[in-house]
Image (cartoon, rainbow, N blue to C red; front, side, top):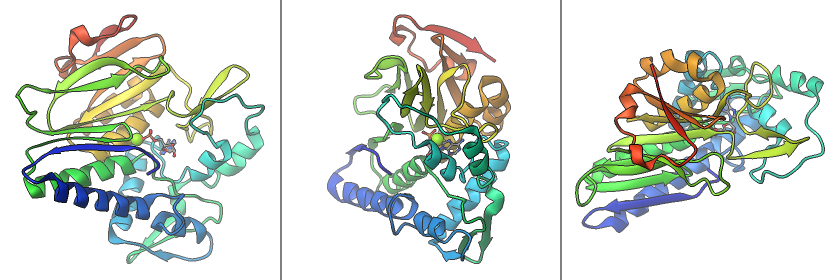
Length: 311
Ligand code: AMP
Ligand code: MG
């Protein structure tokens, strides 16, 4: 998953649990990482326009759900945006670049970014356009987090904190009592200290933002979350969206989709999916609805941010 994973588990014998968790994460990476040569996703991408590929059942299922999410989010979450991501080639470094892709290249590539090119048949998947590229980067960490939670439940672990590259899950009862405390990154400081802290238990907290991977061209920031309607990195009022939900896969899909859609256009989605959101705008407003306001530790809000209630 190209990311750092940190896990702490409270259990009578934690090492077998941790071993099982890391073996499972390796398996998920080996199936879903499109940059890992033999993964299901890499094999489907390599056979695009040529032939269908037999994949693991979990790959088939996650891809099927990804197409469903595409329709539910009106295209804001798009699992077939890989060709666009490759064209932009956004690295993590925030370096300066001498150029950005041309509009004509963007439009050419966009024609191949539709889930309509994805065909499913009896355990096999076929990308019908030779230039279409699957990319599950916006959902797989959430999926993996839910899988780890299943393992924790299966072993009857008492408590755990999971951090899969910023997808955080707090599980069970915090030792010593009280709520777990989860920090939400400040998008504006280089080290992304916490802008605020929320409390809770058995929740996933997933953030999508414009500060995670980007480059600068002519003084403007170009980041890694794209809008299929324009072919450009999303431009809007938001610096980040954090989704809080018991289901990490849905939180991951929603964090990306809500970042693309913007606050107003995603409110119905949030209601339908029973998820809560915290929006941090580029002018340093932390916008949260009543449901999540209670979970925010008011005194934790960093200087310079204002807290606003949204409905
Ligand atoms: P996340 O950090 O969960 O928002 O996921 C961002 C990653 O998902 C990017 O690095 C791309 O690989 C991919 N991606 C970018 N834009 C989108 C989008 N609109 N829908 C789905 N995946 C995307
Ligand atoms: Mg996501």
